Image 1: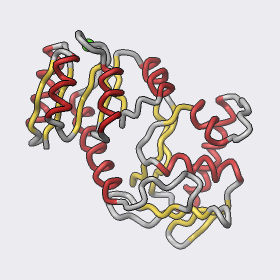
Image 2: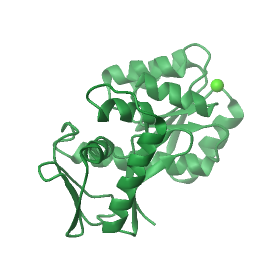
Image 3: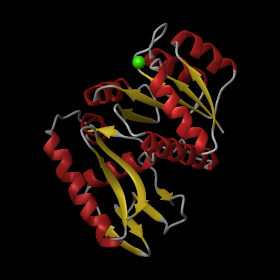
Image 4: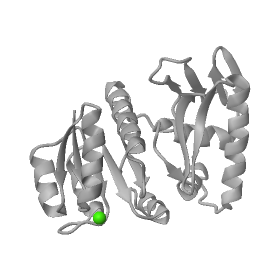
Amino acid sequence: MTIAIVEDEPKLAIVLQEYLQRDGFVTQVYGEGDVALKHLLANPPDLVLLDLMLPGLDGMSICRELRRVSNLPIIMLTAKIEEIDRLLGLELGADDYICKPFSPREVVARVKAVLRRTALTANEPDSSTPPDANHQTSNANDSPAFQLNTDTASVHVNGQSVSLTAVELRLLGVLCDRPGQIYNREQLMRRIYEDNRIVSDRTIDSHVKKLRQKLESLDADTTYIHSVYGIGYKYEPSVD
Ligand code: CA
């Protein structure tokens, strides 16, 4: 597996390179945006770690250009947590966002998670199913099947089920349609309420809380919905 590191701070690039190589990854390092884009298009790696602020061409433009032609996994590196929220709003299509300063170990873990997730999605024949369709998913460890049934407004785990409100059903549908994808509260709001109504962040939080309690009542050992500090929520089943 080849990971491209697009980062203009040499110290950071070297640390990332060392940790990734220690885990068996082959790495390519680019310090200039325009040079990086040319190489990435001509010779796509398995994943790109992409800094936002770069000489030549910024990370946002590189991400957009790459997305026009491929689903190449992209993890964006940003200097500010508030920036992540803005980037999410632009819907650039990056697979994950990591805020500096980061621990290189954390970056390697996120790289592996994104690679696992994209490998899973690539194997699903109907990965383009709209969020309101019925879902049957399982996580990478083949843990119990998780089923969302929109006809009966219920979710089934381990042969047990619990009923959901219309809002909870839509919320869970949006989140689990793209496992691992982080949504901020505004994006969830737009997807949940068809009438474009504006509700407070607290309202979204309380729906998520209820939904989590219901999922926990079915399967106390798995966390399905994770809070991403300062950003929002994502669906990613993980055994506690
Ligand atoms: Ca930079």
